[in-house]
Image 1: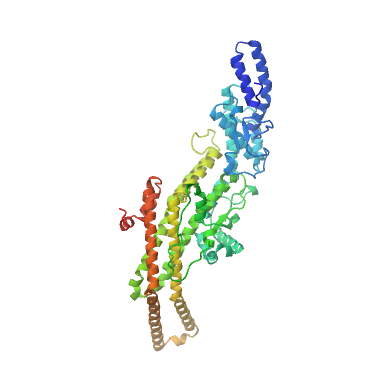
Image 2: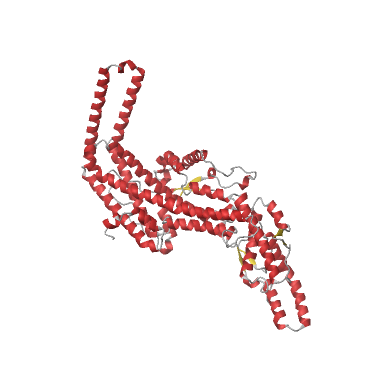
Length: 591
């Protein structure tokens, strides 16, 4: 026993007592005396850890060890959920073999101190600390204040279990009720997961013109101002059931007003490439295909749309246990993916609106058919992709997360802790991590091949939108439509100012004839300009190239979904949405 210390020394003495000195009454009395005195420092550390979450072990003799430099309270900063699970660990060499060696007991000892430690680090823990340090009736059994070495295994196990339940309930109550974790998660869902549709519309209506430039040239201050205004407009009509104010100011949950904008220095695909580096990375060759641009090249640098992210500068403890830096990074990945996909859909919808101005050009419907068909197929793809991610991935996963968190809140007041479900903070962490893991996987962000092909598809759609916008500018459809609207407005104003001029039938017929002639002349001019562009070989090659690239990439994407159904069953839903009638697989010869 001489070389040992702490728990290892107590185990050696106990081994001598039970084996080598069995039957030696005098030797046993000596060993019992040594155990009684030698165990005092160890048991003091055990009781301090179980009742206060404090680790006072200057000589490394206790069964629990910390991975952080200081064992003192850090007042709510310094660690979050990323290192919460590894903050403390068990040293088996110092575990008391006769009473604490059971795996469930070791786990409860470790977690009880961690829970009290977290409660102490919360700024508003006075009430809980008072409750923690007092004795309490629990299920009719009084919780003892101390554990001694001479207690039997059953007594120690029961007492540790009671203190464990008390510590778990205290931290769970702080996290779910005082700091209102569910409200913070709803804020993340509303903005980071694009659940609030009007926010996206308000923001892009105001900021899209700035964000389409390369992100180095985007004014951060202006974007932050527009972001704050969009959030304010959104929150103005938000009817939240939970009260926003609290008598404990620092206990307030994350709010939309604290969201800040930031810009990544790399694209989403480059970020994912770094994450998948161990598996070979994401190889996106010619991601800006097709190279055929009839009306000039698009920006080659990283645009503000691609680099834009939302961010919370400060997440207070203990909310940071759940919404850690790594968790926030996962939310940002999902946001960038959804934001870019919605932006591409928005651009295609705007192209559809623009092309409605040409529906009067009846003689060109056939010539415009390939362009309309390609735009509609792109729009169909983007809308089904977004529907899949929003309503078949994020929403079901969110409902499971919300149900689990609510179950944890209900378990706080239960005298009998449930055997299954959300029972403590670690269960909340596991459920939240699983929500993010499944959402990332089912949104295709963890599959290098799928995300590479999807990136090429969305880039093709975005470049096509750019070319169609330039086509509308070249044919001056907007200009003539604007001038016509101004002329109509002028005539209406004139009729209001001089109503007598419009009273005679002759004047009325004259105006109607003039309007009809002007419309006929306008349609003739527009038809000539649009027909000239449509018959241009450069335009034909451009549409043909975009159609070819989109078909190839869509076929590759659908094939990857079809082949990966055994690995990712959820991809079956997207596969069926994109190829519900078998058109894609038949046209690509993939039956």
